[in-house]
Image (cartoon, rainbow, N blue to C red; front, side):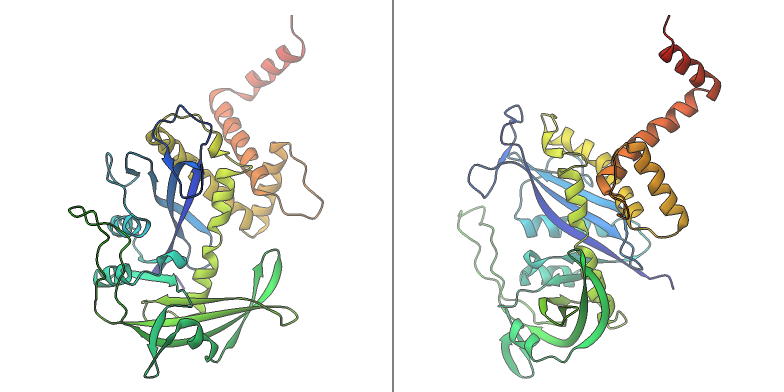
Amino acid sequence: MISLYAPVVHDWSHLQFRTHNGKEERLKMTHGGDVGYELQTRLLVDAANGLPIAPLSQTLTDRVGCRSTLTEGLSESLTHMDALTADIARVESLDTGKKLVHIIDREGDSIGHMRTLSSQGICWLIRGKEGHRAEWGGDTRKIGEIADDLPFIANGLVGWKGKKANMEIGETSVIITRTAKAKRKDKNTGRRVKVQPGVALTLRLVVVRLTDTHGKFIGRWTLLTNVSNEITSAEVARWYYWRWGIESFFKLLKGAGHDVEKWLQRSAGALLRRLLIASMACVLVWRLQRAEGDDNVAARQLICRLSGRQQKRGRKESAPALLAGLSIQLNTLTLLADYTPEELAHFAMVVFNPL
């Protein structure tokens, strides 16, 4: 069955450029002497299997302002959640043919922004903070306390940090009435914006409990969402579980894949343009690494062989090896389009038998 919904995973990552003094627009980060840019990425995910489809948009914030792949020019810098809410509205205007569900980690547990998104008819799934309060059963209690009292149903095994984990799910309905405490400052007075009361939100609370194969507790997710009940609690849990895959995306961008923090572009705008191409390559490799079927297995083996990197016997091909091999494969296809096999054989003879 083809899903009418499409999850969109949102996340932030700092790009560190401490020694790149040519980048005059670098932004001072929250940690000590860290300087660089702040990257926000939104990945469209397949609701059926969790595989990434494409990066819907990216924004890069520097000392001057914010640049987005969905807008022209430079916009003012905003708080994390204000910038995210603005970009969600832009993403919603894209013609994806699906009902988007925006998945955000605990930083998204901001009641003011929840109200804003809900008032616009936007669906979201946010990991709630267990210390925040909600009305349940006639009382006001902490989300974590409500989760403690829910019954759970086993929902199969999931991969977790290289091992298998049992997933158990419980669900209930809660009402959130707390006031919003904005982090931004008033432009006129320079003071922090006052607390803002708002309408009560009736939400689904889906609690996911993870245990290892011996029954030992591993962790718990308290998920708040405004999606309708036609989406089961098991689907909600799986959608959030797939959110963790975005870490693989950032690892390829920043680590053994593209090494973005070594790029020499002097401006955030130039860096963002290059990121567009690199991000699509990361998504393509991510899909290939996790796809099943004989053809995909054969394709991974071929691309890994092109990379020249050795893999341990019995281990699935690594993402950095696939990324390196993909670059060689694309260059090879370009060569085959420009030269005939006979011409390539001739040039090989010239190389190995120089005059």
